[in-house]
Length: 199
Image 1 (cartoon, helix red, strand yellow):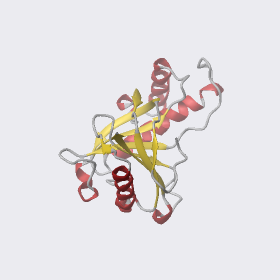
Image 2 (tube, helix red, strand yellow):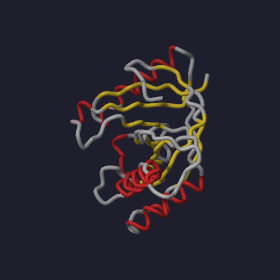
Image 3 (tube, one colour):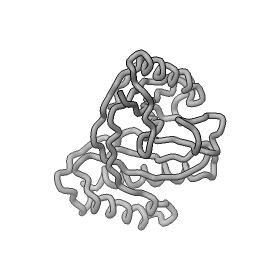
Image 4 (tube, one colour):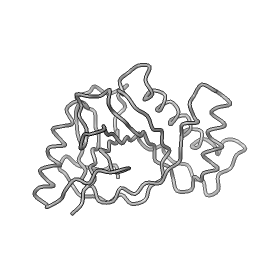
């Protein structure tokens, strides 16, 4: 799921559980919802990850690495997305969950985070299950603003393989962020781009 190459390929990720936070607006706005989403998602994810060190026990738990941040992006009236209209974005930020994490475990983690910092918007966190179906994905290296170059490669691959876009609810422009933008220059960002398709 996180091993995409620089050439497009067809994948079917299957059924995956996530923590999710849905919002709107430009992700670069310093006081926007996106910042709240990341704070809440990471806080709850790490509360679950470190639960074994406390009194709360998750059935079937084993130590794991918190997976990378992901995002579904769309704009009303646009088939895909338009980077020139970042303020019009709707999005769902996601962090994958191990299968042993149940609804009650997520609720516990949200409450634990809220006890330590009531300002973190854990009430916006939901556990969801998503099955994207068949998709085409590619590894994009570079700034988010240059993603169109990789999207064009996806579109060419689709034409050559008789595939068509199939955007719908939960079948969106999907990004998986393999780089930490706080520690990486934009020219070296590594982002998996995934588009839903049908044959």
